[in-house]
Image 1 (tube, rainbow, N blue to C red):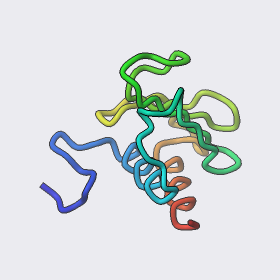
Image 2 (tube, one colour; image 1 turned 120 degrees about the vertical axis):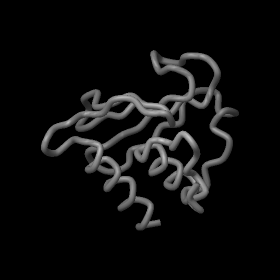
Image 3 (cartoon, rainbow, N blue to C red; image 1 turned 45 degrees about the horizontal axis):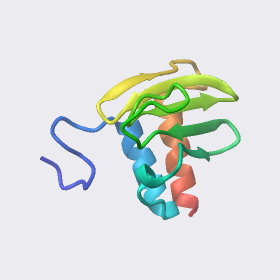
Length: 106
């Protein structure tokens, strides 16, 4: 087990950890108490919509994150994993890097 505060057994998906770190830096608290999804434009390319509720909202399953790249669907995942685009510009690595850049800029 790692000393990382968000790494668990089984491990949390790296992309989800990047979102958690960004949300924490933004001061986001208790998305389960929001009336709907938590939405954020990470940069000019990436946008996320996170469902912290026990029920599906806007076709996003409970405790999942939907990702868009340049306005197009690019992924759907939970802390346990999921799918994300695998193109040259839009992929898991570039998504995580965008989250990390935004987090570092705060």
